[in-house]
Length: 402
Image (cartoon, rainbow, N blue to C red; front, side, top):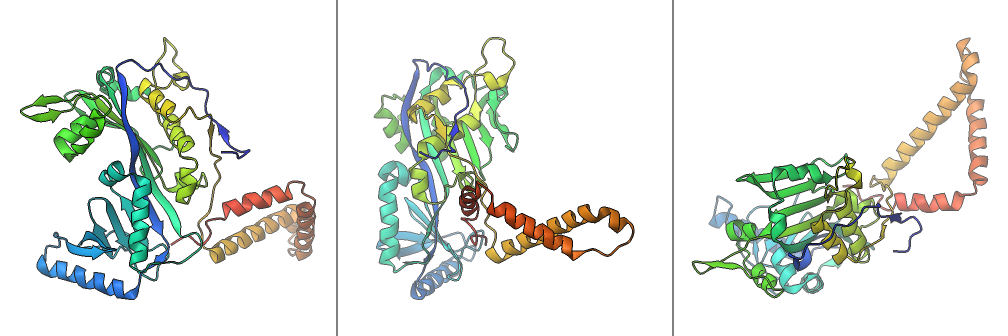
């Protein structure tokens, strides 16, 4: 990261990492993209027929049927999805969603957690585009890939942390005022199992009992094998592994949070992933109180976060933040013209306010003078070129509105 407008990380100390903390695994746990690619009409017809067959076989629309896609085995769902998704294909590693062929960015794909942990992100990306090109999909614009959401997870064995997960821990959470969830947690038997900070629409950090989640909910026992490779020893009860004291710290990034950091395409995230993950941890952080200091902003990062930050390489700078609009170009131009007209009117009224009090007619020559003055200010602005570059960044996403 070389941008001169990059931001320094806040001056927040790291807490020492206890000896019973062990990083068992780290990896992407969610990767989702939108692609501006055109599906062949023949494939559209084939998917439509398969979806209709699935509905015919089960009028409750709950049972998918097998569908060969790009040389791989998938299942096609008998229903579509939110946002105009017509077809949904799934297998153990990948999920595809397709909207109307007339829409831009009509292809969506997501890697499953199982696929990411088994094969890795790079391998899955290769598979996705091998599949799509095999089926005859064509890129429909220059910037045809957009990153929708990415999650990165740290699995940490921490027996001493388990005792800290009580309801009072929410008082140690610090996050921006705009965060809708300032510590949304699930409690059972007076013990916090899940602590969530932030919104999935932007940036969210969640801490949860991954061992319990595997044992009682998801059944993702393949994660235990990954942990055991790094020294974890689960308790065996009635021939089944029981996982205790394994906590997942997960950073989820999406939407405007990524766009406002000029991260739109996958490579822009991958080139800056460690500063982005680190910023997520600092901005939605769990802290440790020190002594009698009542100023929470000075409290150091909790040891769980500190271990993750160190794993990210102790980044010292964050990406610059800048607003970008996604309005349609013609709509945006009309808005700006209306704003200019309003400003010229206000300036003319300000200059003519005495005359207008006497019921004189609004004088358009004052508007002409203001336009001439504004043009001179524009031409003589020493930062004119710099402001042009910033405007180009701000309007980089013009015409991406749906």
